[in-house]
Length: 314
Image (cartoon, rainbow, N blue to C red; front, side, top):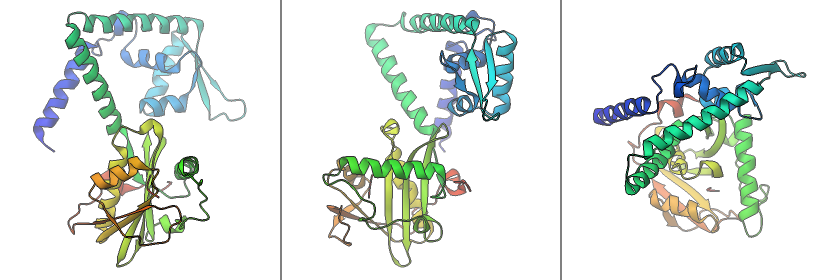
């Protein structure tokens, strides 16, 4: 990793932390640090399950518990166990907590205004546009991609959503029973593998490989959830699939896709896939692609290679 890039990220972090008041134990001049204030905001007016808060904020359970205890001690939050499952706890704001959240919202608006006020109109537009881009890229960097058992609930969710989208978009609908199969055993090492992408511990994408010995490896089940599109996740999934394939000695990748999936076709062409003659009888395919892999095609990143253990082309 380029050390100058790391240095720039660190400078940015310091500047933002100072400008938004994250260094102050009394964030926005209230009686609590930014962690407690953020948790109040995330709980919201409807309340939230504690496990959802942990996932959304990417915090460990011990730290979230300490934050909640502090807010309970101040009379701002109550935490109740579910009547049917005591392991499920829900945090709710008290009337005092709702009032404090409203005050924090008002003061956050004021802080945002103080950031924008000294700037010209053009500078404000540039800053807000840059913030949106930074937010998008930071979100992209939060996504995890891991080898996942196709029987895992996250995998099941992605595959079901993938099939549903194909059924909705294809002119003739989509019936998995008519398509060339990619069953659980086909997507389980050593026969193949399935990558699942998660964002804040929610599944947002998948992609798979089917190995065929010396014959070309198939790319299957490429899908990205609508809320994660625009993050470059499709290209990342494809690149990690290529790295896994190369690490297992694959020399060529094959994939086929439907003409309605124009964004997928654009992705494959941009990634170096070349359109070729049909190499199978997939009934839903209109385009067939191939790509030669370099013998030194790289290896999966640490996260991608580690797997969960528990855990659109066609």
